[in-house]
Amino acid sequence: MAWALLQRALVPWRGLFELDSGGIGTHAREGGLMSLDARLSLKEAGIELDENAFRSKDLKRHPEAVFGADLVIAMTQEQCSLLLDAFPEINPGIVHTWLALADESGDIEDPCGKGPEGAGACLRELERTLPSVVNNLLGLALKSFTP
Image 1 (cartoon, helix red, strand yellow):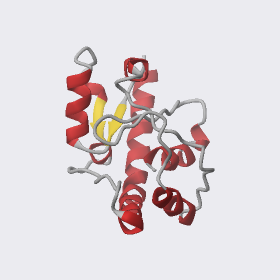
Image 2 (cartoon, helix red, strand yellow):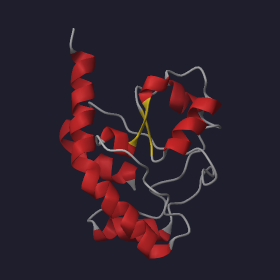
Image 3 (cartoon, one colour):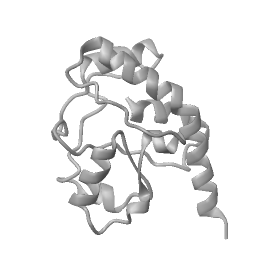
């Protein structure tokens, strides 16, 4: 859901960002479909995704996605720790939680298995913090272009 929201929010800056999505942990199954609850929640928010538009990527099977990243956004601090444990070579400074990028603390709880209510709650939290995340991403992008 975070990927879909960022894709839409960053349309005006197309080309400045390349977004990829992957997972690490208990729910990161290679090639898995986005849950119906997540897709329906996104549809209610005006983002309609075909069933096959998104497939999960297990980052342990795709280390190039991590090693090629300038920034890695995780939903929880536990996921940040799992990423850093799995890829000790990466700079820990590029790994942040979504809420940290929104200048907040805490985690975005995984809605997996929590039905439509869980997916909706997750989406509302992502939408609430999306403007701050986008502003901070733009700030980071500008810093990378500053001589």
